[in-house]
Length: 313
Length: 313
Image (cartoon, rainbow over all chains, first blue to last red):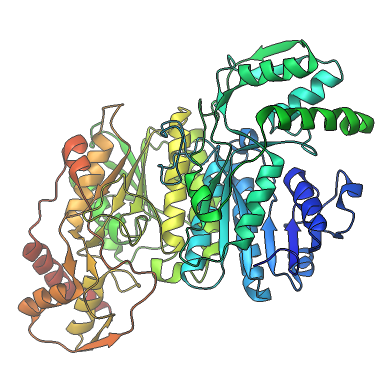
């Protein structure tokens, strides 16, 4: 599949990953329907057809999917940290909601559904590092369980030949358009320190994650759309493959910004201590690899928060 | 935990496994609340306190759980074969229903929740045979996905110290009180042939399953209730460990009953070709093993259908 001549529908287009994806697709000259409840940065979606609606409203979703060829599902209604407080809501919205989406995609003849899953929550504490897609799944939170169940349903529908899909287990993305919403260490840190507030961290700062710059995630989504090998796997880890502790991320940000204040809080039980993804499968089958240097991604993000985020307060 | 002095609540007590479990508990002198919508064989539940109610009704469930110490969850509202037609119903009833049960168990201070999962549907087609608990999970149907998600939620609640639980991934149980309801090859065959009807099988008869006599399943549930080692795994395969094809089961039944007519139908996509469980973990940690010889279990079942089931038509 090529990118340009397709009708893309991006669900969750007003959010962090959705906004970045839409921008890139427009640059490629694709026909893009951007669907969401509201866009934090509507000007960033210029060139897309904005369709305002709720992912949980069937009529809204059906309207957005009219004529869709490639659909990207980047909607999430809960965060990992909050998901254990509201597991039933998580299931109702994100699992049943996605099943309804699958049914609509089948009905509308969608060629491929690309779903963003979670590299950081589906594996669990005892996974080998770096973690390959075949590792055992022992999620510590509802968020990860729901993502996993979505993946399994997609596999059932693929096996039945009802809907082609690709799942991307994305690690910890960062970059422009990521706001302070409970996910995203770098976004949270940069936004806090740029307004001179102290930055709160959970635990002793040794919690280690696989941070990936958003442009590389967008590259992976495009590669998933272009995948033509019918026998290729349909589930990929998308990360940098490199682990960085909170403390080392703070050190990197300090190099850019200078010193800032930190408040340390008790660790959260939904956090696995280390999450670093093995990305060999995506390299091999998607021909994809992360291109952005760590410092480059961090500086681009910092500049974006300086120029954009602060003006909105 | 001993069996006798506990207050047991059996959910799904009117069904196949529930009825057999209640009978055994009464024999042991346990205090048993038998909860279900209706009992197919009410006389079999003599000695229990029957509480009529719907698993999906919170008030009914709360009444049944009053004072519960050990709870066994043997309710299922869909069959594997039908589950892919109604995945959202499956999720709403069996996944969200079980989460509501978990919340009630926490609220009522239940000491241990024992949940029956499915050895035949959680693994998938490519699992090594016999299949250990650590094998990959690639369910072919919603039924298996929901069971898996329930297992993952139970693990989250255990990790948080909120509720102790044990999951038994039961293979293909057979024996008295199993009726013709879409599950159970042996039940279906015996009931059909005893009324002189032909027996329909799916596929070429090579589909292989791990059939376990119900008394052995009940033994495993009691062993799960007695488990005291806090560091022991909380998830066990419960099967015979022996694979038998449909054709070989039919041959065994023919030895008991004499020849009968068979109608062969096309295979179902939700069926994995071979499912045989590795039961080493349960042997080791539960001190459990299946005791009933294949022919013995089959003859006991056959006699039961002769004496009981036919009289109900």
